[in-house]
Length: 403
Image 1 (tube, helix red, strand yellow):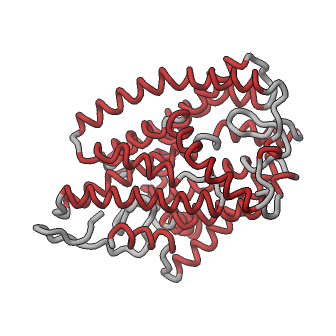
Image 2 (image 1 turned 90 degrees about the vertical axis):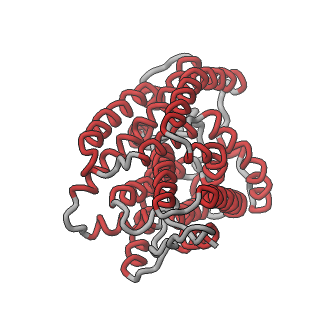
Image 3 (image 1 turned 135 degrees about the vertical axis):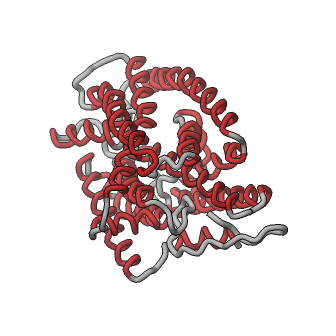
């Protein structure tokens, strides 16, 4: 990505009207946009279930019980959805940051100016996240990624050796610490709740209560994301992939094939034990359930890489984009706008402070609602692309960052 003029250098302002959250511009590969469009579906499905409040839940937020269809939904969601969309998002986010810095450097932008733009992007992501989480009430990820950008942004301007050390040390940290955290969390949860209460008693009943609830929950949720999930590690892997332009199948087809095969295999194997626990096919101790939760979460990184590999191959194989491909691309290019749009609709449909369908539906119903919301966003994005209308929030983010 290029940026505004800086003293001592002449660079071009980004000109593409369809900026995404990751900051890619015209001439970018098809694969990242397709992956972002798909990511919004995975996130919508995962987040919709978090509004189901009439039943007990698993440690990763899946409603327990229900019909056989609900059990099947839970089983496959644990394998392919929960803790899979956010790793894909983090990988693409880190990938986009690396590409953005590289394009700025190639355009002649001074490092000082590039760092300033990274910090501005992080700041406005935090601001967008606060507005979204507090006033709209959606399940937010913008705030934590803004914080994460501040934490790892300096590595974007270091050599590969520094990035490699950071990846090694952070991998060791999460592999050692995360299982301990989740085992302890599982044991404490089991002791505190002999019968885990439904989330209905923990949710606000009106908008004013929701505002206070959201203000309190925002920093707690951010700390949980950073400590109990390997978000920073996943972001750095995305930076590593972006530096190598890994989604360009012309350069890395074999890599993408390996990522698709190995990543999806690890995704399934790592989540299978927890999927069996979630539908009652395996009754085990809280300690073992906590460890299996860790395996499900950590395998999500491999799953995100697997999804990246799949869309990298799909993007390179598309000779002439059809309606579905164009629509998915349009959605991915407006990922910030439609992420907030999808979350807003989920709040309206499922939140107890609006229509409250989360109190009367289960896993399958939440899945269908999420699918409806995503399909609606897909149609709207396609219409916007046809009329050459950029995503409002994506465009606003660009204007704020680049003044």
